[in-house]
Image 1 (tube, rainbow, N blue to C red):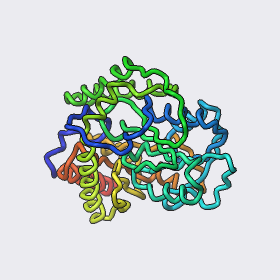
Image 2 (tube, rainbow, N blue to C red):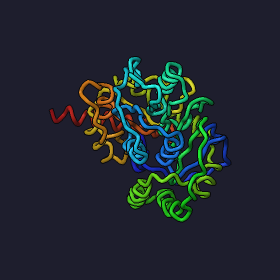
Image 3 (spheres, rainbow, N blue to C red):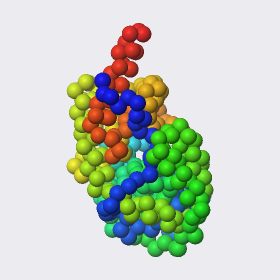
Image 4 (cartoon, helix red, strand yellow):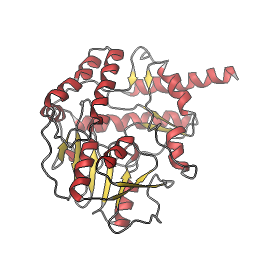
Amino acid sequence: MSTHGHQAIGGYFASERGAGSGLEALRGAARYQSARSAIVALFRAVGATVAWVPHHVCGAVIDALDAVAVEVRRYHLTDTRGVPDDLPLGPLDWLVCIDYFGMSGNSCTAAVARHGGHRILIDASQALFHPPGSDVSTVYSPRKFVGVPDGGLLVTPHRLPLADPADEAGSIERGRYLSTRAAGDVAAGYQQFQQAEATLADCTPRGMSASTAGMLSIIDFDRVRRQRRANFTSLAAMLHSRGFVVPELPRDAVPLCCPVFGVEAPDLRRALASRAIFAPAYWPDAVPPSHDTVGLALRDRTLYLPCDHRYGEAHMEHVVDALLEIGKQHEHRR
C-alpha cells in the first residue's frame, strides 16, 4: 500500500505556481468570465435559433442556450462519443459536439469534416489542449484543468462584440478557495469552491478578470500536458492489468481524467471519497433516453479517476490500491 493515503487526491484545485509556458487556446482567443458566458456571446453574435446538442451534456451549456432563446434539439452519441451520420441538420442549424474528457477530439474532427465548421461549436470544456481550428468555434474552460477561479476562452471565425466589463472584485473573491486548499484545508476550501461555482451561474458575457488572466500566464502548461499524459498512461496500465476497461489515450490528447467503463460508478465514488480520493460525476443531472446507451453509460457506468498534474506515479498506485481494496470488501460482504 502506498504511503499517500493521508493526502487528498482529486477534487477542486489549489493555486498554481510556475514560470509559465504557452497554451495554444490562449493565442487569439476571446476571453470571458466562464465558458457559458462565452457560449452566450457566440450565439448572440451569430443570431443562432437552433442548436443540436447531445443528451449527455453539462447543464451549463443548456443554461447558456436558454439565455439567448436558442431552441435545443438533442442527439444520441455514437460508439465513439460522436455525432450520428444521419443527424437532420437544417441549413441554419448549429451543432454542438463535445470533446469528452479530452479524448474525443477525433469525433469532433469527423463532425467538422462531414458538416463543415462554420456552424459547429466544439465544447472543449473537458479538453483544454484541444487544438483550435481556423474555421470552427471552440470553447474552453481552463478551471476544469488548472487552478484558476473562473474564465472561459472562445476561438471563433465569427465577429464578436466587446465583452461586458470584467467582475474583478468577484473574481478575487471566488479565488479564495485556491489559497485555502494550497494551505491544506481541503474541507473549508471545498465549501468556498461550491460558493464560487454558484456565482458563475450568471451567463452574462463579461470579460475575463485581470487576476485570472495573470494566473493563466504563469502556469507551466507544458508540464501540465506531460504529467497528465504520464499519469494516465501509468494508471491505465495498472487498471488494464487488473481487468478494468479504460480507453486508449489518443496521440497528443491530454486527458481531463482517467475514465473507467462498465462499473458501478456511484458506489465506487462514495467508497473512494471515504478514502479521500475524489472522483467527479459528469453529469448526473443529464437525462439521456433509453436508446442513448453511450450517454447513459457515461453518466451511470463510468468512473472518472483523477490523474492530473498535481500527482505522480505513487499517487496513481494509491488510487489502484484503493479500488482493489474496495473490490475485496465488496466481495467479502456478498
